[in-house]
Amino acid sequence: MLDILRTASQQAVDAFASNLHTSTVGVVERVDLERMRVDVRPVINRAYEDGEHEEHAVLLDVPLMMPGCQQALISLPVAAGDSVTLIFAQSDIDTWSISDTSQPVPAATLRQFDSQDAIAIPGIYTAPRSLNRSSIRKYPHNPKDLVVSMNTGTGQECEVRLTQTGEVFINTGARVTVNAQDVAVNAQTVNVTAPQTNITGNVAITGNVQISGIMTLAGINMNTHKHIGVQPGSGTTGIPV
Image (cartoon, rainbow, N blue to C red; front, side, top):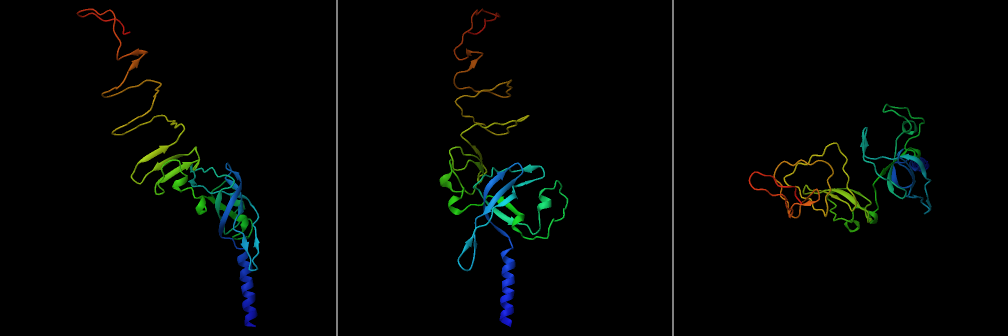
């Protein structure tokens, strides 16, 4: 009799556990970045004692979590094929998911830890596909630096890197554009190395200016130009040519 009760109890526990979802890994199949929703297929197939395995159905319209708050967001370009961590809420999140409020809302059903109440968190990788490998980076990479990168592992890679020594690097093979009302640079030394520098607008310089090379002003070579109409005494010269 005791064995029968033990077996029945174990079967009840197994049945409950088989429908209890906590977390797993999935792969994105469809993305709606504006709504921050994804369709995800869990990729760890369910195993049975007889050796059989069962694939999971695709989870539809799963909320996509990105680092952010009420007025700020780190927006990630999640795409089909990306791996995500799936966590499953302890209550039905359907009502909350479509609400436009930060106030508490009632659960629509009594379900708990259900596959319908998944939340996707991007940024998990298998070891061979890790984007933190130095070997796939275009620019010298230290995994201990703080780095925000885009197009990682491609010829179009760009990054902002904060190093352990306190240096900051912006690395890109394309344009860097700064749009601002005012830009202030406070530094002991500013070095600009460029084949050509163009400035549009008025320039005011306070302090000494040293120029190496040829200075051209209004089309006139200031290194070799001459003045005409030179007069002795207090007379004025002509314009430079």
